[in-house]
Amino acid sequence: MKPSGEDREAQAGDPWEECFEAAVQLALRAGQIVRKALSEEKRVSTKTSAADLVTETDQVVEDLILSELHQRFPSHRFIAEEAVAAGAKCVLTASPTWIVDPIDGTCNFVHRFPTVAVSIGFAVDQELEFGVIHDCTEERLYTGRRGRGAFCNGQRLHVSTETELSRALVLTEIGPRRDPATLKLFLSNMERLLRARAHGVRVIGSSTLALCHLASGAADAYYQFGLHCWDLAAATVIIREAGGVVMDTSGGPLDLMSCRVVAAGTREVAMLVAQALQTINYGRDDERSHWTHVLITCSLDFFPECKSQGACVLQPEVDVSAVCPPPLMPLLK
Image (cartoon, rainbow, N blue to C red; front, side):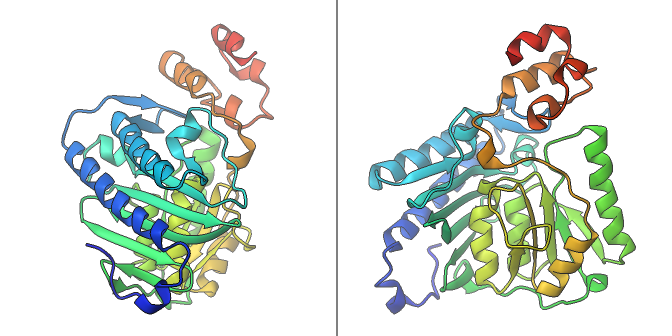
């Protein structure tokens, strides 16, 4: 399932060709692990909320990808979901950097819902160079390389040319937070798009695959608050190379670390979606030195009455003393 159709002669002078080929092979190997584990029993833990799940397979796949890449490219830097959750810094520098999501759609994976993907992005000088996404159960390999086009199993991808929101199918994801204020904003945004007469709003449980559906023309727009750079990096290249637009929810340029995005086949639809949205503030990936997921897991598992539902960590402006059960207060010091 090696990608074909790209301009082989142009690739010959590509300094990142070896990196791209490594990403393809690792995504395929990782996909085999995920596909096999999908039907097996899993040990599940939580990170930033009770809905933000992680399994042993996430770690196994991430370890495989990072160890292989580090061995082949020891001078490169890495941003990977589970490493960041464990305390690694999430900073995009000018150095060649791999941005990895070992399993996108972990909640789907836990429930054996077969919409899961492995995502590997690569950036140099803070510019995204290529993206590789493997749909593990459908065995579709999506690839995009800057200036070289986007492909699925060797077939070139093209986005939708729809310019009217009233004829658009829009995709989104819920995000990890479940506090009442966030849920109210999330549902309000869906309502705003439906009142604008969008044909529909869909949630499939995997932001990377939703974005791949956009790149393939199966959907017209996508938006989300609460996704991370590893959800977005590879897919951004694929969408842009398929002719689409990826931007900030304000309508400005995309900021990979901002935890928010609007993407569409056309700029017209992207702007219409952006104008309809109310902002949900998830902070920034590069402003968290680490996520204190132990605290959040504890508060949600043992103190379901917790008024914060993790906001004490995710929203630093919250008065912790007003929302955190007293037994947890020492953990904040």
